[in-house]
Image (cartoon, rainbow, N blue to C red; front, side, top):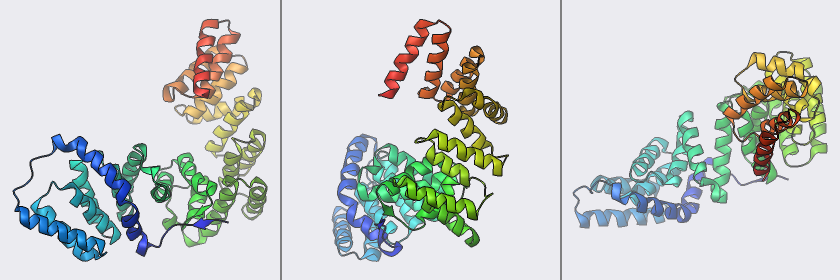
Length: 384
């Protein structure tokens, strides 16, 4: 049973206000220490007036009087614009009051003073999502995650939820599914979660809120089947996908979605799904590329050659196409061209284990022991 931990829009901001300050304040303090030397001298202020405003603002905040607290923090910042704590609380309060544009401005001021204030970066990203600045939101949330913003459990859920939607909108479907995996694994529910998983799995670059009402049923059902699979119930997921295939026999990327989920666990079953996808949608080049790669990983190199050649002809700069064709060619006789393509793939991703394994095979069979051993060492290091 999925457990929903997402608050309603009306109380979400207040929960953030209650839950974030301690860990976020620590991060803010650390950022403040690193940025003190770079700050401009404080503006000319009246100390007593500023202290009075700051104290009244904190009291209003503690009493959850958001309008008054926002007003007082704004006045205090006019007196002392380098007051980092004030910008932080002003941003959090405006976020809590759904005043997203004002919150973005407050967090931007704070980040100018303390560029490593990761909590402010994360909250600015969430505010940008609400205002429709999706590219900015994706940039801020990814940067915040890279600096540890997921370390606080409650914040992790909200950040991952928005990040998954943004990654789907950007066409980065695998990365989006990686984020959604967290919710299935932990049995967490959220508004439009199944719809979001369905969009990512079926490779539709859209936000849940933008899906036409007549399409909700398809993506909701596909997302539910994907959620069940990711949560570990593969038998039930198989039943759900089979029902979908009966209802939507030629819908693009439905068989692909199931094949993609099966790929890490059962390449043989994944191959069947990619074949089914191509039978229903022969021009699905992504399914063709995944078919070629899966055949290679399954050691079925001769079968992989034709779809790999087609995939590479369609997208010669794509790493997956280079890898599939390189492995297929090398294992069917053309080791020179195979090595060239595998090295092209490694230029995209030097840590691609499958490409290094392919080079081990090529160098071993060609008698180049030194290079083969070097590649084996790389594989051992990557496998750790």
